[in-house]
Length: 163
Image 1: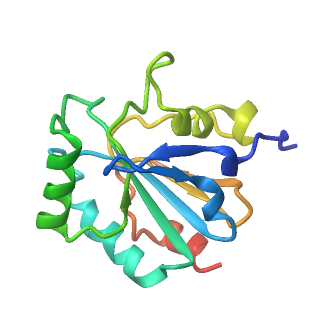
Image 2: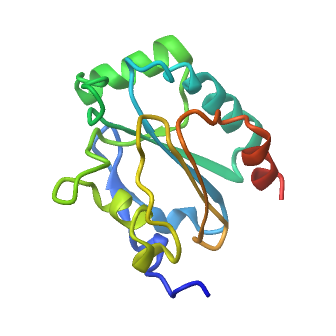
Image 3: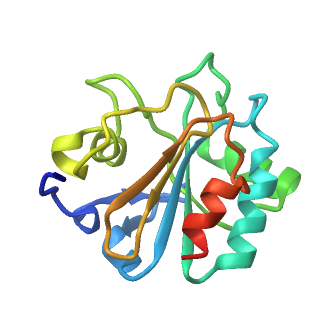
């Protein structure tokens, strides 16, 4: 049985440009949340994420959360990260402010929700590396988690996006 969770839509976070971004505006959309890094072997996944954004928008919103948590693979400032993503991968999906996605005391509030089954209803898994993926459905429920090695255009993810 799934436990009752606090609402995903109560969350908010700052964008990479420093603007407050309320998740309430995401009601009725699927949301793919990915912890990103600019200097990782999985960094080319930005290309696939952008392709999903172009294909499924506006029904899918992708939120990239840059993090320097794994072997300092995203040491830049918010401005440097955004420039890297735009120039090298043409990223137009929403990038969020650089933050921590792991560690009990440092984890940002969004990742606290994503990794606490008493809050999200079932999942306790945090990202083990950069480019882990979490899928939220149109009702604000966490419905999927995929590790870094699963690419954004993997059939398992596409199946959820096409429902």
